[in-house]
Length: 211
Image (cartoon, rainbow, N blue to C red; front, side, top):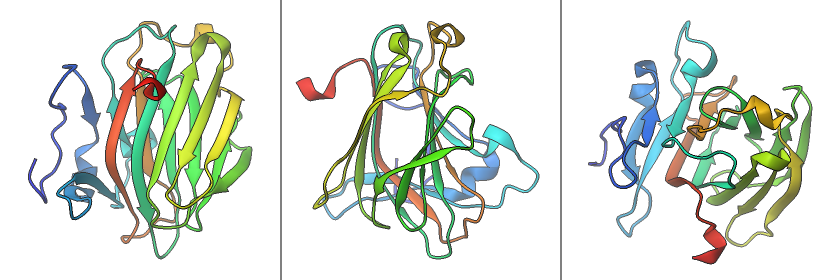
């Protein structure tokens, strides 16, 4: 994909069937950009006013192929968030059919928090300075209704959470097989300057620590 282009919905490469889902109202804010001087590209997600759109129609989603959800799944991505006038970036993990696993929020000040199953209670787990590159690994074990989280940012101590309860506590609530998905939303209060740039993303059953 060329610099400045809007991403295609179908992702190239193996496995076939991975998708990027977004309402066309978000398209003006989705552009391929240079990630760094080495020629690496990233997907820049900028805030746009979506008018009367609501719910997950205002989210940018990466949807994996159908898989056995009883096995451990790793959600992995690298990104950076920048904003001048405020707003949050929300990250949701689901089974692809709306059943929630986790929600994480990064505020304009860099505060990182996890949202509980009541969709309201938030617990601060660390801080990522605005504009800092961060690599995120969610390790999801559906059978135990728990997940682990690791966030690494150059020059900073890693943020780690273990055995965090999933938002949906009953494993039977999740579809299996599932299309594990990770979604992002620039939240209320975001301005035209708010950008979340995603350098890489993967949803996999391969343990990244064994590579």
